[in-house]
Image (cartoon, rainbow, N blue to C red; front, side, top):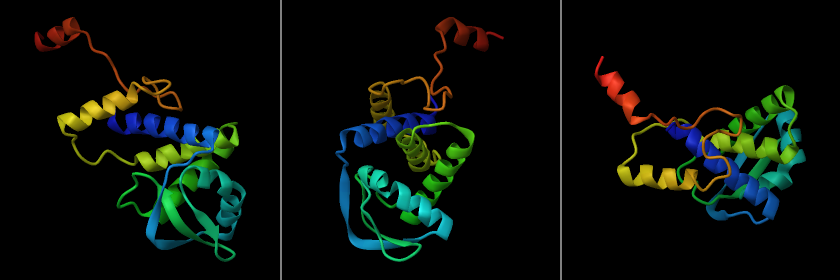
Length: 165
C-alpha cells in the first residue's frame, strides 16, 4: 500500500463529503493566523473562499492580499497553514490548466494532495490498520482521485516464486 496515496484518497473523500453536505468539521484556532498571497492568488482565494471555508477553514479577508485564518480543518495539528494553503492553491491552478474539473472536485483534489503531504515516517501496526480501515471505507479504495494505484495485491505463489529464484 502506498501510504501517501491512501491518505490522499481518504482526504479527498472527506473533502467531497464536507463540500456536498455543507457541514465542515473545523477546530477554532487559539491564535488566529495571518496569511498573505500574491495579488493574483488572493483573487483566486476570494473566488473560492466560501468553498475553502466549507472544508473546515475560517478565512476572512483582511487586506488586498491578506487573510486571517480563525479555524482549520479538524485534525490538522502542527501544520503550517500558509504552506498548506499555498500548496493547495498551486495544485488548484495546475488542475485548472491541465484538467476540466468541477470547481468543488478541483478544490477537494487540491486540498487532499496538499494535506496528504509526504509519508515521512513508518507507521506502527495500529496506525497501518487504521489507515487500511479508513481506506476501505472510501468510494474507490484502490485508486487515487487521479487514477494512480494505491495498493497492489500479491498472490502467495508470486511471493514464493520471488524467494525461490
